[in-house]
Length: 381
Image (cartoon, rainbow, N blue to C red; front, side):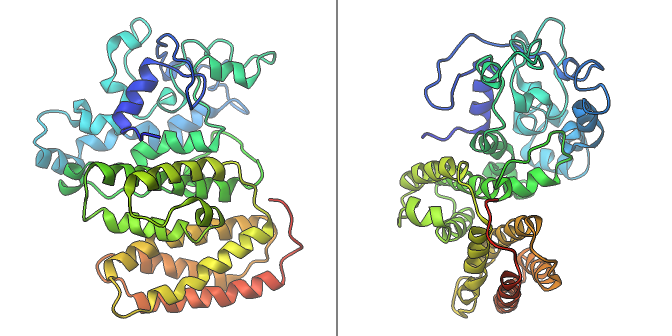
């Protein structure tokens, strides 16, 4: 699979729609209808059980993603980049913070002004061909997808829709002062004010693993285009983590060839999105990850790489632990405390202490062992 930059992926979704992720037939251009077409009182702005647009507008950071471009750090970044005038009108900024600003006028319905921020159609796709029938009871979901709605129920498709803005960052933006981006699908979905319900089995672990494999694919693609010494430790850390998972052990090659890793990571993401986890599987993965404390005890190891490993390991521990708790694990304050301490240690980029991290990870391993002994019999999650 050839990875797409965010801009090319967005441009493709704005101009065309495919009936499937792979080899779908490209059909005629569909136009955007704007947030207001979703938020009427008869649709998603109608109150209880139909309040998706209300939640989005009032609580979702995506709705105001454009607002930070004209002040504070954003202005300093714009100045460093040599951007003249309003940053929201510059493609380097609006491609993520307000995507519709960069869309050609002929891709909007008549007289529509582009939405500010990351609007409904930025994620769900141009609505012209499915807007009027997608809530009908006699229409099946596959028909709506065929009409052009992006399939965000598919965890792999969801990861692909989010990863561009939440991971990819041009070197020029980073050097100008833009904060580094870190993509972890499950945690970021849970932190988002929910305007949908999704109670499918294994959603947390599946989203976490699919998202991380997708991130590895994108990082591999980026490094295949240009070797970046700043980015390389992040890539190595993610490879290290995913090779400790059941799927990663079989799917990921033992190579630093970026194109090969890109292809393998994409296949792993597809499989991870379909993989169901049992309680026993979550417990086993947690035990294996917590047993990695020895990797952080080597005094001669690359401290930068160790910090990057900690940076990807902690979210994995956190997401798997949250899922285990949700499935009936008892409240173990020792686990909660250890994971919180690990998070604080991992985020200390300048003064990361591998020994303290290793010690706390060992404490988590002991606490998890106690939890496993009192957890109900394994079940499908």
